[in-house]
Length: 271
Image (cartoon, rainbow, N blue to C red; front, side, top):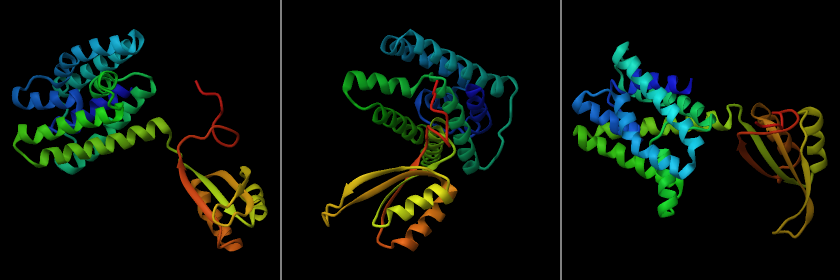
């Protein structure tokens, strides 16, 4: 399903506008621009040496899953674009970049959740990490940046890489949402002289739990308690207003939390 969604994103948005999202698929779109060779077929051909190294580096099981993802997505790209000849969903380049990035991110996110890949820069990034010491994230970013930037020279159009960066940014954010979860919760860390009142409010009004830790202020060298709790996003305003009402000098840290395992959230058993 991930490969199908990704393939539709290419057929409906990226290929018609010649947007380069980075990686091997970006090279395939650039070659298609000059030769009209099918993008899906080009992706498979360009990925052959990548998968040979990938299987040696990460094992046969990962390589086979990734090969399956790559073959399915490549065949579906050609099926949608070359066989069914789906037309571009929009003539607006900005909309195409936005929705192409969204569909690419959803598709890749589902593939990654299946512990596979579709080849390209993610495997190359792991290869660079092993032989050069460059982190995988930096390796992928450098590869994608170079390929997207090259589209400006290939097309002789300075706007081309700008659209490519939009696609890359959006797809990366959507991949994170797919992998880490849609329902953002908030991690709240509270240091206050009124911790008992705050604890009671969290337990009774918000119907949440938490942890109270003994703490000491570095500045005042004063002993106290720090309350740590995880609440739903919609409860944040209510908690902030209550803390402000009981202790205006409370020190509060609020962080986004993408996955919470335990009572009241997700089951602790993860496959």
